[in-house]
Length: 565
Image 1 (cartoon, helix red, strand yellow):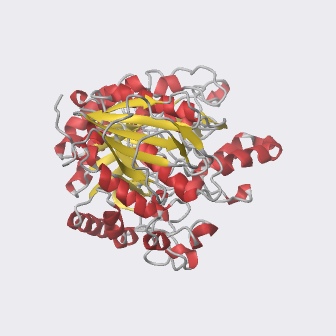
Image 2 (cartoon, helix red, strand yellow):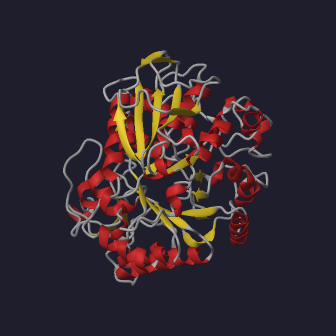
Image 3 (cartoon, one colour):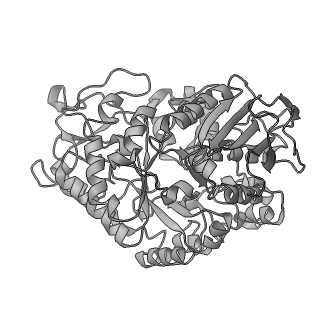
């Protein structure tokens, strides 16, 4: 395996959810020109790449993750010329562009699917999974698989009297990757965007593309059925390697896979450079420490989070590559989720989370608004949610939904994806500077205090701290390549770990609680030449000694570093 450090190993990637980022024309929806207007902001932050959530043509049943045309831009976001301008402006600023690649499924309005449903024997029928039903007259689904969004994973078509598979909504039919024509279509899509200047892809639910032959019934499960037959399927590695050779590897790209259900052992296979599949993965294990299967709440325990961190940091070392993230468009905001009730310590808590996460090994991702400490929206009624996932969850309960509504609402307030999809808070003007029109979704009322303009003016703000942290990490060989060793593993309040590389060590100390917590350095770290390089309180702790950490205090020390470096 090559020792070469690829660009994504030393880059912060900034995720943009276009609909909620910046609106340039007053229609209330973020767009490409709005993104262009904020490129200097992203460059100044220190990010080296942008991950753009889908901007393809789509009927928007799932906010762009149901694509009807892979080679064009949705009019609400702009035009293909706008996209080309975006690429050109990013090149001027030495920013790379990562596009979402959604190819487990298409929209049910895609021309392939429209043609496939015309008859049972046309050339596009095998682009998807069409099957005869069970029971009398075939009116029962072909198997017992459930959709990730609730209910059956099958929908009946009256015209052809068959069912089609959709692991998500009925508007998102699954592509049949066993068909070589489908794989060639995907390769062509990848190369089309690479030729337009894209630098890589985030592959949406890529671990679902290979289904077990015959589509057998799944084991019974309370929340889902069929997972073992479509997650990490029998041909997944063959298909990814094929796509890499015929598409991804044609440019100097970065390919990250959304690894729903991925284990450490599977991630090693996916991301080992010798296998030529993916460059890094988004695993979900740390994001499930407070939610079982991302659905049922359970009490957050720092010890569980630390176990996951150690497992993946040690397990992938020199074998694969990780992604570092606490937020994206599919999860609620991290503040409050991993910190408990931060009360008046929002700034300290946000900085602490950044240190705890981004001093580890892997490619760091920042989701829009995370760098200013944006928080969950305070929903007052279940009808305020717009996410299709919420609507599907409610429909699963059928006539019993009114009975369970209070419980559903309680969970959704803290878990719903809509929490992360409120518009970006740029300033204290009307609609947070996001739009001059009526915003497509609610603006968080705290925008008058939590916004980019205020953060830029405050030298001690979360935003300015992120800039310092990013600059410290970039080019830091210890953080890019170093070994991870955890201390205080059983401590329920502190996350303490060391990174080591070529005789230089970096010690990270984080208090996850809104209270004072004692800390005593380990003998391995005591009495060493040390320098405090990052901290989230406005005072210094130059000496590494027994101390009482303040609420959410976080410290980063360099140990054994030559004094002239």
